[in-house]
Every structure is written in structure tokens, then in C-alpha cells.
Image (cartoon, rainbow, N blue to C red; front, side, top):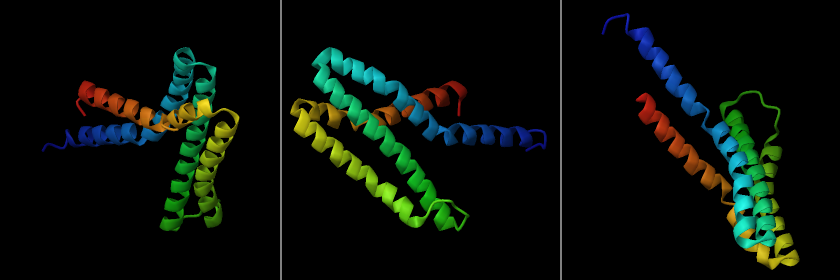
Length: 147
């Protein structure tokens, strides 16, 4: 392989790595776009109670995703031995708090408006929808750019 092609190959590899390393941020952005669309669609199709449940579920899912990202980053930093501002107990606390938040949300929705529980449960799947959108986006970019 000629030396003139080597820098181009390295540049292409860096571009690919840069693109894929942004997946978490794009998933978070897709969640912020999908949540209002899903809530409005739920309100239009099923009414206000389901929309409230969807909104609460989407909020819990977004916060849970954010905390999970931070917890995993904290675990990786601690495992690698790098300096971290987060304590091990704080990382575990936030990791477990995600589930407490889901349980409290479900309990409140169930006691206030049982009809909203289905909306809440559907809203918790917001990260799944965002990941599906991200997968489609990555497929489109890979085909378009030939990655």
C-alpha cells in the first residue's frame, strides 16, 4: 500500500469512530424529540389520562437513561483507576435510585389514575424507541457514506 493512501485510511477510521462514539448523545436527543411526539399522539388517540401517564413514563425513562449513562461512566472510571469525582456508593445509589423512581411513579399513577398506568409503562419504553431510531440512522449513514 503506498504511503499516500495511509493517512486517508487513518482519517476515514477516525471519522467512523467519531460518528459511532456520538451514538449515546444522539439517542438522548432522539428521546427528547420522540417524547413530545409520543405524548401528543397518546393524547390524541387515548385521551389526557394516558397522555399524562406517557409523559411521566417518558420523564422517568429519560432520567433513568441519563443516570444509567453516568453510573456506567463512573463504574468504568473506577475500574480503570482514573480519578473520579463520584464515590462508589454514589454511583450504586443512583443506579438503584432509577428503579425506585420507576416504582414510585407506577405507584403514584396507579393510586391517582389507574387508567394512566398503561401510558406510564409505554413511556418507559422511550429509550427503546430512540435506540431503534438511532439504529436506522446509523444504517442510513453507513449506506449513504459507504462505512
